[in-house]
Image (cartoon, rainbow, N blue to C red; front, side):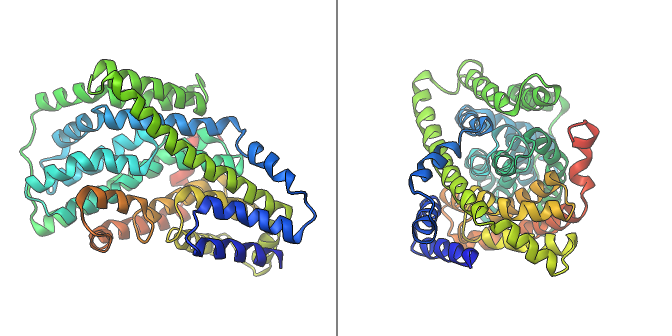
Length: 427
C-alpha cells in the first residue's frame, strides 16, 4: 500500500509539470507528514547527508573540465584528426563525427556537452560539403550519447553513489562497450552513406595525419592522464576529476590559447549552474531513496519479483523496458537515482554483477537521451540544426535501432562489460 501511495504522489506531482527534483522532495515531505510519525525536521538532516559523499565532488570537476574543453578548441582539433583518419570512406565527415564524439566523450563525461562541442563545428561543415542536415544530425545526436558510456562518465559516478559501487571498476567496464558501440554507430553511418552515395573526402597523407594528431595530442593525452591515474592508483576518480579540470584549464588558456583569461569567469559560472542543478537533483533523490528504504519498498518489490519465478533473463528484460520507458519522461540522473536503489537489490539477489548492471543502466540512459519527448541530445541538436524534434526523431532512427541491438548484446553477454576490469584486477 505504501509503495502505491509513494508512486502515486510522485507521478501526480510530475504530471503537473513540476521539475523532477522538486517532485521528489515534495513526495517525501507529503508522505512523511501524512502517513508516518517521522519528524519533518529529520528531512533537513537527510538533505545534507545525502550529498556528503566524497565521490560526488567528481561531478562538478568533470563538468568544469568539459566546459573548458568545449570552449578551448579541443573539439575542433579532434574533428580535424578524425577526418584525416576516416574522411575518405563513404560518409567520411559522418564517420569523423563518430570518431570525434568518441574521443571527446573520453575527456568530457557528458553527452549534451559532446553533442554541443562536436555538432556545432561539424554539422555546418557537413552541410557545406553536400550532406543532408538530417544525416549529420542523426550521426551527432546518437554518437554524442557515447559521452556517458565511454569513461569518465557522470552517469557512472551517480550510479556508483546510488549503489556504493566502485567508480574505477565502472569506468574500466565502460571502455570496451564504448568502443564497440562507436564501431557499430560508425558502421551504420557508413551503410547509410554508401546506400545514398553521400560525399567522401580526399584521402589524407600520413604527413597530414601526423600534423592533425600533433595538434590534437594535448586533448587526447587527457584520456591517459585520467584513466592511467585511476588504474595505477596515483589518484582516486574524484582526484582524477580535479586533475582533469586543471589540465583542461591549462591547455585551453596557455597551450591552445583559444580562450582568454576573461572568459574563465563565464565558464566557471556556467559549470556552477549545471553542477548546482545536478546536485539538487541528487539531494532530493537521496531523500526519496531514504523514504523507499524506510518503507522497505525495494525489499517488497524484490520479494514480489522473485515470487513470480523471474530469473536473471526475465528480470533484465523487465528492467530494460522500465528504464527505456522512464527515459520518455525523465533525464538520466533522475532515473538512475530513483530506480537504481529499487532494481539494484533485485539484481544482486539474482546473482547479476553490480558493475554489469551499472553499464546496462548507462546504455539505457544513453538511448533515452536520443528519443523524445525529453531526450536531452535531441533538444541540444535541435538548437544547433534548427530542426524540429519530430524531424530529428525520424533522422536518428537508423542509429537508434543500432543502439537498441547493442543494448541486447551488452545485457545478455556480460564478458563484454566485465572482462577488462577483471583482467586489471579491479573486481
